[in-house]
Amino acid sequence: MQYKPWLGLLIVLVLACTANEEPTNTVDDVVGTVDVSTDAATDVVADVTPSLDDGNHIGPVPEYPKTEGDPELGYTALINNGYVSCGIPKSLSHLIYLGVEADRIPGRNEQNQDMPYFWTSITSETGVELIVGNCLACHASRFNGELIIGLGDVRRDYTDDFSAVLTTALAFSSTLVDSEEEQAEFEKFVTRAQALAPYSMTRTRGLNPAVSITAGIMEHLDPVTLSWSEEPLLVVPAPYKEHVGGLSVPPWWWHKKKNAMFYSASGAGNHVAWAMLASSMCIEGDGQAEEIASYFPDILAYIDSIEAPEYPWSIDAELALQGKEVFETHCSSCHGTYGEEEYYPNRVVHIDEVGTDPELAVLMFEAEVFHQWMDDSYYGQHSWARPAMGYIAPPLDGVWATAPYLHNSSIPTIAALLDSSTRPTCWTWSYDTTDYDPTTLGWNFQETSCHDAITDPDERDAVYDPSHFGYGNQGHTFGDSLLPEERSAILEYLKTL
Ligand code: HEC
Ligand code: HEC
Image (cartoon, rainbow, N blue to C red; front, top):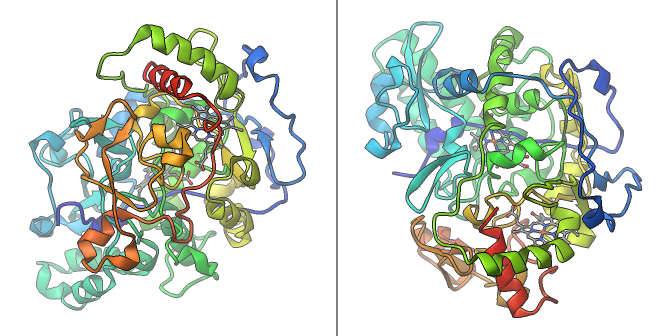
């Protein structure tokens, strides 16, 4: 049960949508300060193709004003506030995994002293103490055994279908809890979790269904009134239910450099609303949304105050210096430069050029129902979907801690990313975050049989099989033409970021 978060899908998520037209909102609508971009280090980015914006939104992502906030208040709100307002009554806490001592984090209020980082205890408006999910369920993880806030989770298991469990829970709700208030809270939560269950599944443990879950929320949440409907309110394109949500969770410390959120840079405009959307599973009316909006700028300020962790083992400084040179020749045009002359190009690369699995970008680009939902909704006042037919080349600060790699977690090590002839087809790893290989910068993995050949469900769920829709491990062959010693030098350099 440990990492089976059936209640964790209360958690929710993020993401975005689509369409080729520019939104009606303009940047001027947004209150806040404008970030001025740097034009440093233009020498290494001279080969970037200028933006020929043909509606595919390839090239540099435009910058939008940011809302200011207080990072300290943001941390406190992130770990104590009820931005996810439904969950299970505390009287049922014996049914869920409450973590171990090492899962407790500093800064929690009295009600949360005993809670692990991934749960928050709140009191509902009806006076019921609830345990609810929070952002850290997906946005905190261990590396080499150490808990790092902001690192994307790589261990949670979303491979099971909990629809039947939830239906049973609903049928017996009155016998499970003590009061009518508790029963009403429990039923609210289970009803929503049940509607989202088909969107909450992945093919492999460790991958994240957040994008599909958001599609499910939009299916049931009225964008104007923010009230929940048990009946679907829009038609979700079929692939969202076919588990395309098998994603990697990007580390939070990259966000401060990005002009738009998400893999295909679809989260345009003010980022606060996009981040709030990640808490929308339990939302009830725009009054509640207003209250959450009052402290969400602080939460984003906290997210943007997080720095990448330091590489925990020794680094060969001379080799890293050679690697820096190779990196700046072959990689910086997309991924930027680091150190004193830091520069991040915010560059979206067309799916045909990067060559990685195109399905996520295509789906986000084409799903106009979600673009419209965002435009119509409370969240769309200063934010809109501007999906690209490609992926943003992410910053690479602390990238060594973020295995497996690419938006769909399809490649276990950076060594394999940079030499496509060494990529495994089907593979597994121990899900033990001390099981890391510092020479390849990734998990110690084993090649295995593929899903069709495995009958044991637990064994199968631990295997990554690139033949599934959206799970391809092709593309990004930019390291293939390098010499082996150049690749080793780049790996050493990446440890310094
Ligand atoms: C169920 C897991 C899950 C939960 C819970 C979750 N997120 Fe995320 N988050 C993701 C995934 C997956 C992505 C990547 C989606 C994409 O890029 O398409 C993401 C992306 C983001 C990004 C954009 C990062 C980038 O570099 O583009 C931010 C910021 C973010 N989440 C903030 C939050 C906040 C704030 C909360 C809590 C209110 C939250 N998330 C809750 C899974 C989750
Ligand atoms: C033409 C642009 C381009 C070039 C050149 C390029 N990359 Fe990338 N890189 C990308 C894009 C786009 C992605 C995201 C692809 C995806 O997630 O599907 C990416 C992803 C990555 C990732 C994985 C990040 C993650 O989120 O898991 C690493 C590591 C990386 N690149 C390293 C390099 C290195 C090292 C080089 C130089 C040898 C390089 N790249 C050259 C565009 C580029």
